[in-house]
Every structure is written in structure tokens, then in C-alpha cells.
Image (tube, rainbow, N blue to C red; front, top):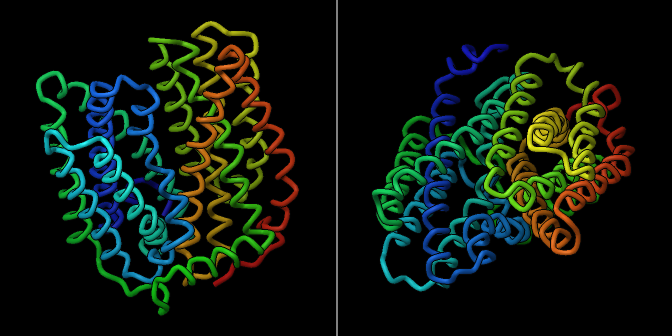
Length: 394
């Protein structure tokens, strides 16, 4: 399986892709509507940012409690349950006069349920696709995330001109229901990966096993920290470029898209692994140019080139799967995903704090330097999982 035509010829992948697209579009439209409501009622930029981007922090709680649900529940049931819970929450957001604390509680509950079941989606890819097609499948899902985020925010921005936020929530609810329906009817049910029940104890036990294994711990840290610090750089695009920040975000999205397509579609496995060190350095190195306060065209070029480096995550995820027994694969990938999002959120907060003390251009360069240091420090641990030295765990 080497082409997109081969990939989309697989019915279950096609349906998983469509369900994911509908869910992302629903999330972005409802996030913008909630942000508009929050800012109108509070005037607080911090609360507005938390309402739109703070939900991934619920993944920390999910990772410490019932993350084992990703393996203990049949995958189709887990994904449908999460979609319906979030759909119900989005419908509640459409109620006028709902207190702000209740709106925050709703998004937290939805994010929590998503965090404990989300790993089932990525583990399901390993069931639907052959082993050698995982990187192509995951890179294709990654590109859909960026595209649907742009489309979702664009759609919400347009419809908010004609509709009020409550009506936008109803539109998002419809998209959530569509995502649930496509997943339920378009994906075959499979048995749970693990026979053990989902419990906090099992979640913590598996987390300990993952964290005490040097190879997997190194992979998780390498997937979380350098990229999270670079997302901190991106979080400063608005302070740096003001109303032209959209050009920088578009440039970064273009670079990420190019990296995912190039690495996921065109590079053979041996070349993917050989280029991991280069891609990891590429992720942060160009942002050092921001110390010189580059003009917008050069800053855009920097964002394009640097964002190609995010593609290093694809072969590292491939290694993580190879070093994880099938019965805990959902929790492993869920922990990776939740940790990545939480690290990005924390690094964005760190970036904002630094930018309150020094100019935004210097703050970007400092975050990039920190990412480079983290990359260099964490590189040694990757030798434990080098494909030539490790046997896949089956």
C-alpha cells in the first residue's frame, strides 16, 4: 500500500477519515463560537483563550485515570461513545443564558471522555491498515486535521456573520452526530484489545510500565517536548505579527502539510529513520532567525521550513507502535496524543509568560533555543529504539 488511491480504497479507513474530518470541523466551529461568547461576556483574553484551547489539559487527568478505556472497550463503541457525549455537550452549549462555569465544565467533560478513548482511533489504524501503511495513514489523518481546522474556523467565521453563537453550536452538534453515525455504521466492530476492565489501577500500572521502560520513555519525551516548545513559538505569532499573524499560521500549516506528505507518502522506511535527526533539528533551528526580528516574508519562510520538521513524529510513532504490545497499544497512543497536546498547551502558556518579559521576537528565539537543547539532550535515548537494534514487539 503505497499510494493515496490504495489507502482510500480501504472502506474502513475512508470512513474513519470522514468521521475524523466531521469531528474536527465540529470542534473548531464550536470553539470559535464559545470564544466569541466568552469574550463578549467577560472581555478577558485569558478566559477566551482557555475556552478555545484549554480543553487538552483535561487529557492530563484522562491519562492518569481511565486511559485504559482505549484498550478495554471495543474501538467502535469507544469512539461512538465519545462522539455522542461531545455532541450532547455541544447541544447544551446552545442553551442561552448558561453560566460560564457550566460552559467550561461541559468542554472539560467532553475533552476528558475524548482523552480516554482517543487512543482507540490511532490503534484502530493498525488494525485497518497493514503495518507498513501506518505512517501513510497517520500522515493522511494529520493533513486532514490541519485542513479541517482551517475550514472549520473559516466556516465559523463566516456563519457568525449571519448566525448567533447558539445557532453555530447547533450546526456543530449536527456535525458531531454525523461523525458518530459514520463511525458506527462505517467501521466494523472489533473485540477489545485487552480482557482486563478499564480501571484507574490498570491505567496507572500500564503508565508505569511505559515510563519505566527507557526506550518507550525516550520516545514519548522526544515526541512531546521539542515539538511542544516549537508550538510555543507559534503561540507568539499574534504578538509578533499582529493582524498579519494569519499569514504565519498559514505558512506553518503549509510546512506541516508538506512534511507529512513528503515523509508519509514518498520516503521509504529506511530513509524515514535516517532523516529523523535532520527533521528534529529542522523543527527549531530556523526559528532562531526571529532574534533578528525578520520581516513578514522571511518570517513566513522560516515557519514553512521549520514546520516540515514536525514530520519527524511519524517514524517515531512507528517505533512506539513497534515497541508496544498490541493489548496496550490504544493506551500507548492515547498517552502520546494526550501528552503531546498538554505539553503544547503548557508551552504556549510558557511562551506567553516569556513574551510579557521580553520582545516577542526574542521570546520566539528563546523557545526555539530551548527546543534545540531538548532535542540534543534527548537524542541519546533514541538509540535504544533504532530499527536496526530492536525487535518489534508482537
